[in-house]
Image (cartoon, one colour):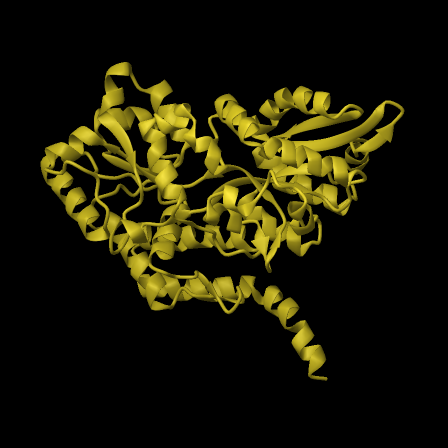
Length: 418
């Protein structure tokens, strides 16, 4: 594998410079269509696009780094950025941003931009954005006596209980998969929990904000408002949503297109999207700052051309083109003024929510910690484990996961004290 990766490295050829770009999933496929315009603008530069399945992307990027065969430019999930910064794999962009007026922090949603900033240094440029909010049945909510979606936790619970009292006994007011980490994490962020404390050295799961959020999360299931089912235990969620089995669902922007493709025309007027309700109202209704960013690897032999590619893909017109090709929501604020987004009622809720997003803890261990959050949540939901017991065990396990991080962060202190 390492030999194969090495053969793909960007290099200078008799015909010019070759830049190696790695894109994930559908985005990697679409990126290929955008390169002829870049190459026409930069004679002598050719971009070789390699499409990598999301399921293999993380392992392949790490293997490439270890084997000194990293690409020049890559698409990187926002939650992966801290890991590659810790490895020293990425080029810091601060000096480049100072001489590139077409890319600025003010052009992006603040919470999304923040996912690429570690220790006040910028390591990535947002390419497309992702967050979670509520998809809901307008007609079912109206039958329960609500003419608009809830904006606070108390209103939300009142609406769900009203729906449960009126609808079919076999239906549920909301579907929250028990094996997904975003919902409990969102509730924690809304409660003001940092999730990790002391610079990411320890968990904050025993603290009151996270306890409040965790109890709120469990209330959906213990009150019979959500089924105790994982994401793969519902055969066709779109069909069940249309049938009225579920009236609400916390999910992401890709499902705008899925709802329009997978449900009949006469159903389209019955569903809508709404920002997350907050503990105390809309202002506290935050959500996750997700999506993917563009990064340049330190190992690149052509960092100038690599940055030129990042700058090209970050332009508003290219962001809009990318949105039309993929359906991925654009990262730049300017693109949201285009009629294709401004006139889309389902997208407008995402624009509002993206103005209230918060990065997850920026530690390399986050992916592992996130799975532990839903794992202990699921044990409480399905097995009846008391919330305090689940959180104590979660705290202990996460602190073990972070043990090496504490050791690395405390090394300078110990050395200075000798």
